[in-house]
Length: 81
Image (cartoon, rainbow, N blue to C red):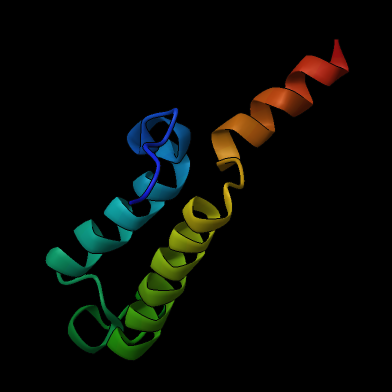
């Protein structure tokens, strides 16, 4: 049996989940070079590769218990005071 996490994934990894959500929104709106003609949108294959990496990175953080970006940034800000 797997131990229950002591935090909400949606809160701890909000930054990472937001990035994944934004990438999905862009794809849903057809923001790919093949459709838009804008190089900044990137090719479909590039976007899929980026999305795959984002998901793998997030799952790795959860699996290994690493802090999310929001927590990391919060800790940096605390140390600046």
